[in-house]
Amino acid sequence: MELILKQDVQKLGFKDDLVSVKPGYGRNFLIPQGIAVLATPSAKKVLAENLKQRAHKEAKIVADANVVAEALKALDIKIVVKAGGEKLFGSVTNNDLAEVFAKNGQSIDKKFINSGIIKRVGKYEATVRLHRDVIIEIPYEVIAEQE
Image (cartoon, rainbow, N blue to C red; front, side, top):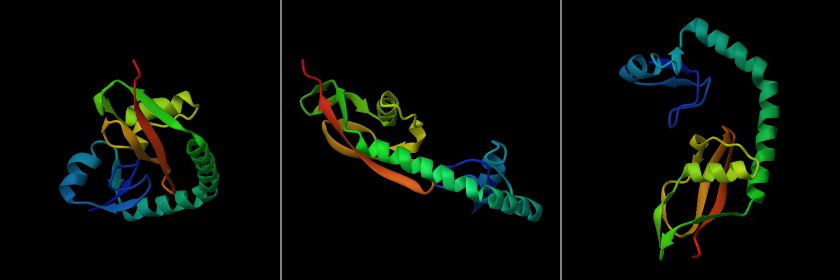
């Protein structure tokens, strides 16, 4: 079953992508949730026209994403958490990184950050997707809180 995505779907595609999925997934989840529409010939023509009109706007969006990427790469991120030795009391997640980015003036939704769940002190890398063409690796460090 061919569908046109109306929004980004993790591990499936980005907005306005033409994807092929199993019929049950499309009929029972994607279409009722408003995430996708059937890829009829007329819908494909409308999509092609929209993509053509949006091509020049896309270049500006990518340029803005690259500016944000450079600002994020310049950050020295240290997350201070309570820990007993090497193990953390709790964990460091995408939400914690999103809060650190927000404090530094970069508003990034936590669903675009992929760091996994960190349960130990140390150095890690997070993948941040700012645009479908701009995906960066951000190094950060988890440090135990001093008493």
